Image (tube, rainbow, N blue to C red; front, side, top):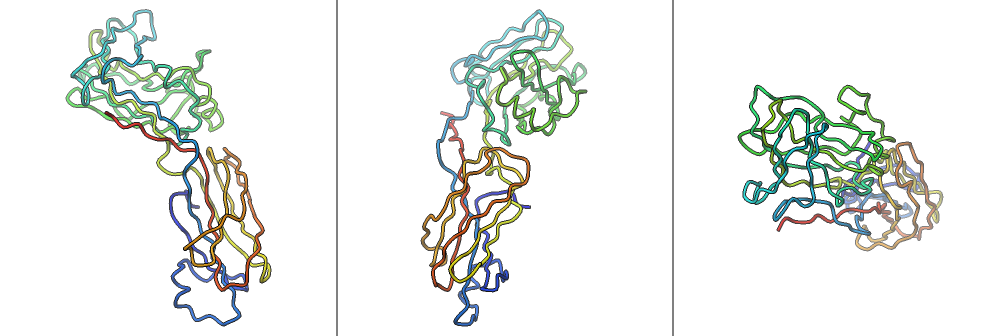
Length: 318
């Protein structure tokens, strides 16, 4: 099973539809008979189409509309700290009562995040709570407007000495319904929350004390670092000297628009698009896909499968 990234995978086929090797350079030295026709299937990616901005808060000048709300009646005091960040400014929340409070995301983050499946929610925090007073509770929540929620527990609380960096993976793994004792979240429900949540809550209260502070900086929603598709196979088979069939199978697809098929007759120096097949978009079941293609009477044909999807353009910190 392959997780689809930026690479070429070459499989050389002869006229008897038998795979010979996994290296296109082989053709240069292979001693073939004059009437053999060779067929190379390959994988490559084209990551383009509809770039969009990824939400990020660096607190360079203000709170950027983040708020602090307690899971009780007494809310914390939340302010912007101009020089306490990592670096620059930061959001600061100070506890003033019993109960656990959270930093609440602004509208810029409260969007359809289904495209971010497989990505990460990143943030930095530090606190001044004592080691003896630390608590272990839900650290990150996705909450719908009706109050239903899924929760995530990070591996450790923020340091009181230096900034701690977190990267919460935006897949169902590690998420629970309602609280840390809840059942594991399913893929279907996780995608539903990514699409329909109302607010992201990031814990700011890590101590049982009632006067400690927590600082937060560099909150970023990052798209997946690799193209989100699992491909179990990609093969080509010669039907005859003028027709070939391209077959591939996906195990999962996330935000995939379509597959484009390109053909080259000069070992990948130039390519021409010969077909397009729509993808499932989002899927966790096996999908079998094929395409018939006409081939010319040439010694070597290279076929390239391109994955077309939507990716994000990161916003650099100024």
